[in-house]
Length: 327
Image 1 (tube, rainbow, N blue to C red):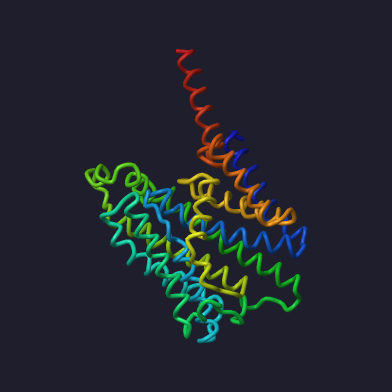
Image 2 (image 1 turned 30 degrees about the vertical axis):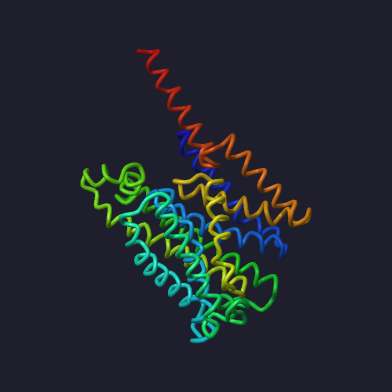
């Protein structure tokens, strides 16, 4: 068995053990942290699909997250739709909104695009705060229910909710990884990120792929928002704040942008560390998380994914040196 296959199997086994750990240690607090961590992981991976792969930096991605959360809550509370239809509607609506927001981005890059997306996020938050008849205003929405079909026992309910969130988040991750690694979209995204003009001169339809990235990224962010709404069972304007966008960007940087799986893992670890250290105090746990991020930015600038990429690069250089020495 090759070393690559052994390493892949080892990573898969470690990931499976990590996912099973909250079920084995079925403490309500552990399940609560693990469930929210997976929601944030899907959110961070969706941001990376747009900003990490195509270089279209978004500072207002929490706007899509907020739209998805409110869509799910409104459809379930007002129209009586099940959570499955609510999540589907949240994904599709946010994808459509992302497509519309993506059109102004066709001629924008860098800080200009960042300002446009930041403005979008602020508009969503203002609408959520002031449209009281629909969104509940500053106090938000509640009492719209959770995932359909969950048992009434509190612990069993948390376990099943964790399984639902884990399954949907992993499917979303698999779709994004397949898109970026097994289709033409991945190389096209990276080419646009490196040099959009050169990519266009090489025959890449930059308009199509930029809109595709915006649409899919917004759709998965909205799906994460719907998961958040059904799990927390409370949606308020704060879920679309700029602070939420900054947090998810920090998670993506911590994990390693431009890899999809790096931000996913980074969000799980960073959220778990933040919540797990609450026992030392709300201020001190944030200081500890800030210190961790500073250390990573200085010593591991490419994030968690950069550690593996660095080792792979060292191995490739060693292989080239061995070939040169033998020739």
